[in-house]
Amino acid sequence: MQTAQRIIKSYRRRRAIVCVLVGAVALFLTLTFRFISERNLNHQRVYAFTNHAVKTLERLMLPLEAGRSVLVPLVGIPCSDIHLQLRKLAASLQTVRSIGLIQNGTLYCSSIFGQRDVAIHQLQPSLPSRSQKLVLTTDQSLLKDRPILIMWYPTSEDGQSGVMEAVNIELLSNLMLEPQAPLITSVSLSVGGKHLVEGKGVLDNLPPLENEKRYQRASAHFPFTISVTGPGSTRLALWHLPSQLPLALMMSLLTGFIAWFATASRMSFSREINLGLAGHEFELFCQPLLNAHNMQCAGVEILLRWHNPRQGWISPEIFIPIAEEQHLIAPLTRYVLAETQRQLALFPADPDFHIGINAAPSHLRHGELLKDLVQLWFNKNPAQQLTIELTERDALLDVESRMLRELHRHGAKIAIDDFGTGNSSLSWLEKLHPDILKIDKSYTAAIGTDAVNSTVTDMIIALGQRLNIELVAEGVETTQQALYLRQQGVHMLQGFLFAAPMPVKDFPAWLAGNISPPPERHNGHVAPLMPG
Image 1 (cartoon, rainbow, N blue to C red):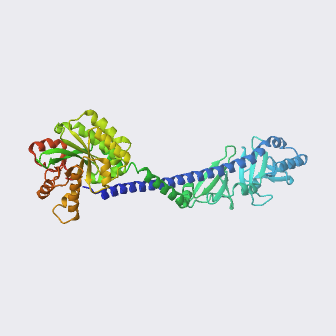
Image 2: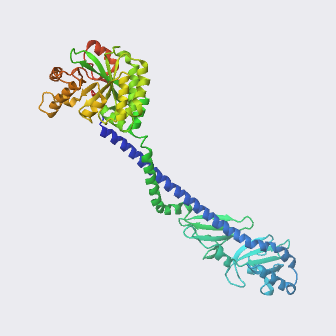
Image 3: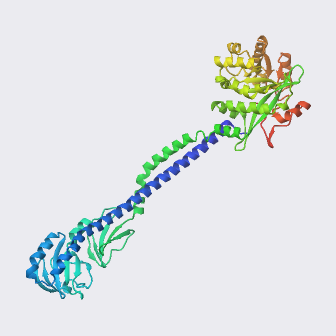
């Protein structure tokens, strides 16, 4: 059998484990959420950066493409006639470094130098070309070896004539290709197999990756690609994860506290009692009361036993106080009343046969016990005499004493259980007018000894006789105790000397043979031989 401390400790340990697990899950989920959130945010930032760079370069190049319609008709016209116009067009296009006109593979007119006579392939080996072309290269005429972006528009079928617009990409790259550490450590512009890397100039190959990732975005209008390099969204989010630990710990502790309060009702012994009532895990036992004069059975005290399939046998000394503390004693009493009424046929149908049912004083408040008795007992008109045994754990109020008078009016007898161990007093007995005093077993056990309780036992007996109250001695275990109590005029005896508590279904057989039954059993399990 489990002790109260062990059961309560078990429930608290289970609650603590659940709360720790909930807190751990909250910690994990918080860190996971923050990791995923930052990873997605990093990814969005990389996407936004590359998209912005692509859109910016496109916006700069679209006016050049739009001006092609003005430049193409100028090819073939003598440079002296159009030089001024070329200079004005170059000035209007602020990002253009120079505009050149090529005829039959020769650069013959430049917006900067005017009249020229240079083979274009000497300046740019990839030109001329039959198709429109975007070239990333270095300047070989004005600013030596500086990055330059050339837009080539052919004007003849053989591609030997056309317009060449040189864009000052170096200035633009300082604005578009500037890294944003630590997310973006390197940015590059790729055109036709050439790569303009920020801080490194034009390269034939992109720098190799070293524990980094590269994200690329191509333009939808022009043949170029923007590439960004960095540690990667996932890796960077992992680096920053320890900084999220304080917030995650706070969320974990908060969730753990919430779980502790939320599980107070679902992971508590009171919930087990409710489950036991719903599942009919409680079983009625009874212990006979013998008439001290003729030693015949004059009644029984109904006891409650609980075999919890989750915890095993649980003593009434454990679940009754907890039920009182958690305001569940009334449902337990209703259960006892209903089950006793259902099994009344097992007891003699004699008005002098007493059936004692325990009740707590708290059940009397607001007339609850009276309503339950009317519904579950008095309306059935049983033949047996009902005795309500009140414990002395709580003092009775005046309003509750009036409820006792109502019980008397309905024919019930009132017994004070475990008399001498609670809040009893002479004035209290005067208000209640009990019919029966049940002498606590601790006083019965003191009979024949020099203990103070032995003297108190004699005083209780004398008090009961003086007030003309029927006396019942609990816990009678020896013939010496039984003989002494009979000699002192105690009316009824109850204890292991005569019968141990037994399942109600075994009472008829005991009554027929007037022998003590074997140890209590419930569904094959040995039950504790302990009064409720």
